[in-house]
Image (cartoon, rainbow, N blue to C red; front, side, top):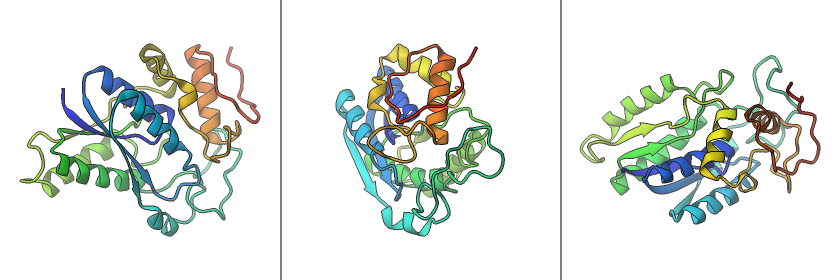
Length: 229
């Protein structure tokens, strides 16, 4: 299978993606990006996944860029992470606009140097996701990279999103089949010692386990996720 540079934050989705690609026989290089996110603890979990899978892991420091991306609760300490459920109306304060474009630019630069055949990102089927987390964006980005790297990259270099057809509950189901150690994944936007249980990402995590019918082993400070029938 192909040599793949996989963008792995340490979150539930990206770690499951890494396990999935490993099971398929891909030769992996895991890449994490410090873009100034307050929940930088997630990279500890990306490193754990890399060790388990026997893959090299690099953390790229773009934290100075994060200081310029103010206005998001993830990169701006003056913006509080809200106790927000996914059905909350309005523009999300948790989105970092153009973040995936930033991460992918770094990943493709690494892939060119490594002569890798693929870059992988763990976006999922989420209608409320950021505008740079859908297949239309990924197709456009790949078209740009084919121009930008022509003559230097592996001739078959492509961009793949193995989880793009799954909702988060589907990712949990897949991860269960693959034996993903859920306590070695990180979701919380607040980045404390344990998951807060109140932010939008913690809410999504709890709902995903409930919908998948899988016991959630995560320790939360508090939990108010609705119980599904």
